[in-house]
Amino acid sequence: MWPAFDAPEQQFDEHRRRMVREQLRGHGIADERVLAAMARVPRHRLVPDEWRSRAYDNRPLPIGENQTISQPYMVAIMTQLLRLQGHERVLEIGTGSGYQAAVLAELAAEVFTIERLPELGQRAAQTLSPLGYGNIRFGAGDGSVGWPEHAPYHGIVVTAGAPAIPARLVEQLLPHGHLVVPVTDGRFQVLHQITRDPDGGFHTNRLFPCAFVPLIGEQGYPPGGN
Ligand code: SAH
Image 1 (tube, rainbow, N blue to C red):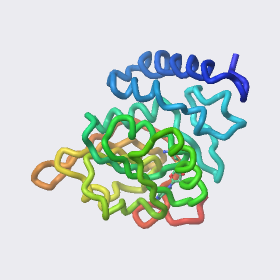
Image 2 (image 1 turned 90 degrees about the vertical axis):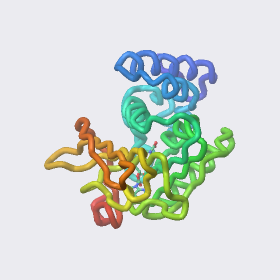
Image 3 (image 1 turned 60 degrees about the horizontal axis):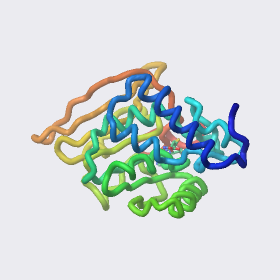
Image 4 (image 1 turned 120 degrees about the vertical axis):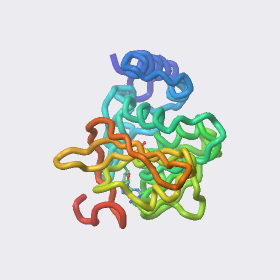
């Protein structure tokens, strides 16, 4: 059974442990730090109340404003692709619920996250600070051009689908840093991992199909579609 909305925290803890065991470890997520981080972040506190009982299902959930919190498996894969060790400065585009930001905050030194819809960004900030995530900085605006004031980053993750690899984001990566971004390719989005080479160039790893809400902005799609 799913826990009731006001179920004791313990019941959510149990569901979260099962999520990590079955949906993540059971499906090939092998980075122990990522698994431990996702065993800690209280996802049920970051979804709207009416979805709380489903917070640990392996599916995206609505978070208002026509946006979604990504499914746990996708969060795990994207986080794993950044290969974080603990000392890094990381940028996330698309704060949404704040869940991905919290997972990153467990694994890196500093997290910068930017959201174009102010209501979502504010809600995420208000939810995460009492949970003790003091190493996250929240920004409002078009993150498709990155957040140049705090660049360069060891890793950048885009949690919305881009029409092409956003060049402005690649420029904000440190050598050996990774950009993880869903990019539209024909009728599908394909998850890309772009790695900055020490000589300033970069190489691209095309991974697998995925489905994200669109990235809206200068290096994304024009507004109006959503
Ligand atoms: N990472 C989120 C998932 C968010 S869904 C989570 O863990 O819950 C994608 C988010 O990207 C949406 O909230 C959407 O508003 C936002 N977004 C889309 N285009 C953006 C842009 N150019 N800059 C910043 N945020 C953007």
